Length: 298
Ligand code: SF4
Image (cartoon, rainbow, N blue to C red; front, side, top):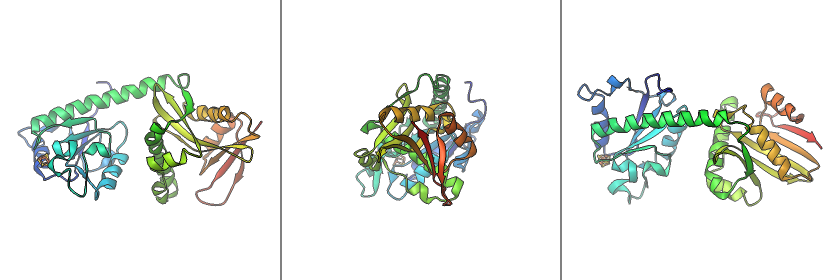
């Protein structure tokens, strides 16, 4: 494996298990099974973890916790659902507060069967997850090498709502950390919210081989074509995705009097990127976060 030169770290989270599967996860770390001999370490910090091992189904109390842990893990990351409860909810799935398996909330990469899952099966699941990590890493390299030539920009469909919500959430989280205003994270639209906005707003997507790398909203206001909420996957920033979205907005409304980009903030580097495409700042208020308006005259 070319990417996994260092020890992969695992974060174990008990979503709502009966503790049967958790005992088996801990058994993997005892001298009998000794997962550490493969260089795999157990960590309590999501920011250090490569793999998320979840036991139990997801219930209404911990949905946000599980989602936050996943969001805090650095890319590339993989999710291993350990046991039948994590796979589908098991016999608890008709319980009043259970959402079902982990896949209801997160993209699961590997399922480990069993009730409880055996340590050998868990170790096998972890080794498969390491292959998934390598595949994700190689896919990113492959796509990045083809940018910006292979980028296709067009109007997003309703089935893209989930990915658009994910990209906008990441952008809001990034801005929230800049301004220390975590209300921005809560203000991000859910996939259902995106679907509602699609009725009156054009959502653009920039994709390579069907993988959406960036998105933005475009609408006409009094003769101006206004682009906002430009959100680019952080793994593909500064590779022409944003420029592709701007060009897509201009193509979508060729008769606009001028083209406008609205940003919540813009650092010096971001402004320099926009200037390359003739967008110049015309307005910045004293508010924090500081909204920025950039214009491109026809
Ligand atoms: S799969 Fe079985 S052992 Fe594991 S958490 Fe569910 S009920 Fe418990």
